[in-house]
Length: 369
Ligand code: G6P
Image 1 (cartoon, rainbow, N blue to C red):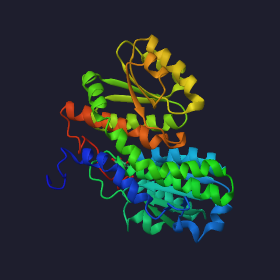
Image 2 (image 1 turned 90 degrees about the vertical axis):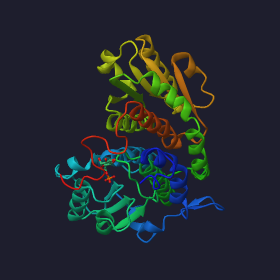
Image 3 (image 1 turned 135 degrees about the vertical axis):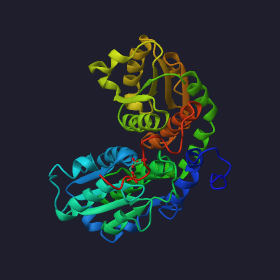
């Protein structure tokens, strides 16, 4: 087992650091580097179905569900088709209004999660087409779906998912760009910027990984805390949800994510002196709104870690610690912003002496209900 960890202390750490490679492998063959075009032969054969979709549904569990939340945002923004998303255990029992002409996207690292598989079967029974995004060739989900786009993350051993998540995000970008292009719903300039950004994303993730020391510092400061809050708006809210899940799963710190605009509707009552708050502020149109939310928690003397793109100097005035992300087109921010959150959960878990790769009560793949 030590040999398999390749010099890392834990599988999770190894998998976090494998992300640049996993992203590169998932991009390979899908990004024409000369023409800067996205290619998805996986769905090209049925393109007319995809071009005429009425609605898209997304269903998944755990971390894969969080990748789906980013997917919903991207598909609606770039393809302009309404997208509904549910965790699979809800979708399968809610008598969903899905039918022929609709698409269900299921996302599953293992391709074996019982609820996700049941959601897939439910959608097929009702006449919809199913696209699976999975990491395991030959998995149940890949066999039963109509179309499959593989993430090429390689085997993921740690229970807490990391490289599978970022490669699932990457597939969501590729799909939204591809369908946006096919439908003519995406502006040429944005398309080119994003494709160029995706090409560079593995290298940018590497740069974020190089900031690990900053995260360790923050983790050490908050080692004994029992609660943490993650706040963000838009895409940052989706990433916040993944950040809180990672922290809960392996550090056993009670963590919650809130859409920052909801703070005033309850959560602010829990923000007291020294409570750690991780605030994501990567989205330009929402930056001022985020700053005022951060000021609200700052006024209650929370200890705040702010995450934003380089150059956002205002952040330092209202937060205790900052992590600055290298510039990419801002829709791509989730792939970078999640990395410090993964590292935070990892180091908290290590510092607290937990079994990082095999957290209590959790399994890598949930194949029974
Ligand atoms: C379990 C794992 C999670 C994973 C979820 C969905 O809860 O611990 O890491 O996100 O199942 O798994 P899947 O294989 O369907 O992505």
